[in-house]
Length: 456
Image 1: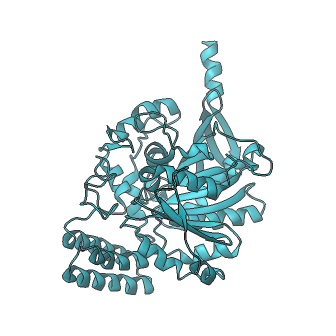
Image 2: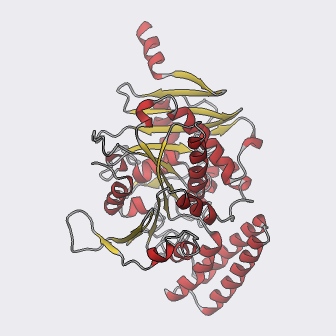
Image 3: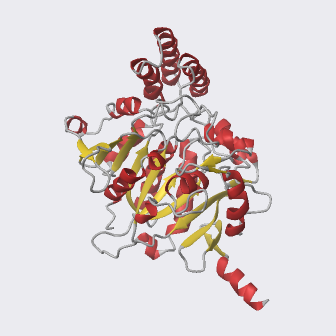
């Protein structure tokens, strides 16, 4: 009985910071830590930190920490990003060969509240804007970093996927403000935007022309789609963001109809037949808010990059929940996911180009990376918003030649291209769709090492 009690004390600890409450736990060897932070009364964010076994002690190049923000909004980084894309284990709990843990410590957060294992005790507490989500995340970072001098020595890189890009740029600015005010003890290494929904207008204008060029759509579909895209542009200009979200949903239906159900995650395939969407978790889901709508069903299964099916819902609410110990009995992974997207409808189509410009102007390193065959956040649309930046280095950046990328020592197969000028970089990843780390893991891992300046 005494030993059990001592182990319980080891695994669980309680702490208070600036009026916020945290419940933390971890593995006995300290290689993993996780916990809840009550970022607002009755609003709880869940986080999970993996410490890299590959860490290299190099004072000139501190070992980085990588914060992963999933898309949706409403996608679980703790579940999807961790077990399906970059974490140390895949959905079968087998070691992942190209885990990003080889280059950095990994910090996953289920954000916004209501996502994954994060929860609210009152449904009115779900966030409605990207800025609100950033404020909650900044509060969480204060709790994790301010009392830990070891973590403070490591630069934090905010990596995002899909809608997570909007969270990343707003968090970057919020964290920077807190750092400068002395409220957050943290080194911000940079922000990386993967297949990100930074400018919805530019992206939706790219869909139909891209599909027409690919022989996937005729002129009828092109004209109808362009008309809806023009409506979206006007609605955004007038600040009618919820109306723009409704028109976006209509446009996606038109794209699906006139392309004969193209896979939004990989335009080379029909919906549900792509290398990722063919897996059960993503099958039949045709919107950028698929994550949150999937989570609200509480039933679906998936495959990791390895191929065979994995029941992620059962994994997260079975062995993982049991391991974590601190998840309340009445909280299920994904149990509140259905709350997130509806609450954010008014912010969903709002652009965040200005925030990218602000980060660049403040000297923050910003990286954009995109999968070649993604449609939902296609490279054509991403390049369009990049060209709208007011950053003073844009003209020079656009004039650069691309540098080819290869996987390891194999110089016979080009896996991507990159360009970099001052504190802005762009990576074009060939053969990848929306989920770059899962579809091109080798070159993705090399990219992460370059972005984070990992000494390994």
